[in-house]
Image 1 (spheres, rainbow, N blue to C red):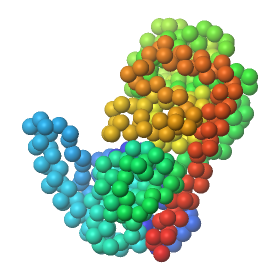
Image 2 (cartoon, rainbow, N blue to C red):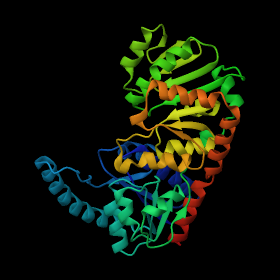
Image 3 (cartoon, rainbow, N blue to C red):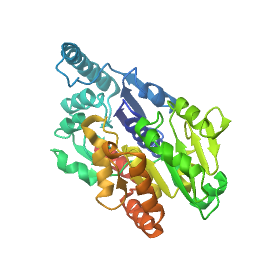
Length: 377
């Protein structure tokens, strides 16, 4: 069998596609797998590094402004779109796939539309509770639509009934027990552990709100706290040094039971050990929180398309599987109050953990692969 994947732009689109492709390669070693992406985004590095064949097309999104520059850019985008559809059709005809799978990003549009016109079986996967523009359009014509959460269904007009498959989670996140993780981190079993992060680059509003909390927690013995300031957080670490935090390395500070890092490179261990997770509401992060059954405070980024992180977060909040603070309401005080409310009520944390775990789809890879194989055959 031949599988053609189209995805790109962010790790949230690319990594789930790679997880499914890896599973298909493992189950069907004689199959051929090809990815189509863009030459200047993350997929151009991540896909070849995962050992998959990779071809590129030139495509980008439309600007939502009426400024002269935006209008000119959108004219160029239309020209690029027409060219990308030709390129997509050529790649598809040469590869002759049994099924074409879209995992989001602008690149999915021309590839899946070309496959539909060529009458090749098609399917897409939508990671977010509020679908992106590309998948909203594709849902009307592809053969199967797969969703991470049921909530996305009300925003689509699909040709066929959507299937909830969940979102694949990295396997290493599911293998570490809480006791093992805490032992690895050198944390006493009785104390609560808070884990906070704003993504790989960091989130300045979260860092700002967290500053007073980190300083206060560093002077108490009641809680452990690991915070990631992000790779853009070098200055933030310098400022905390002025508050008495000790420099353990160029990227790690420590004071009392508080550790501040620029980047968390053992997230599987830290999340497994945590009692409370604080962070953004990207689809991949939420799937990991659900799979590990963690209580969380979610601070959705308001800077993403269609404000989709807010909708992602509310899918959990509406099921009492998380708490939310919108960035416009975020402050050191509001965050501290919510942290204290949760940490002072183990029963509430246990209930939230149970509800989060109930939302998990542990066999997501298999469910998605089953749809793909069905179409291929």
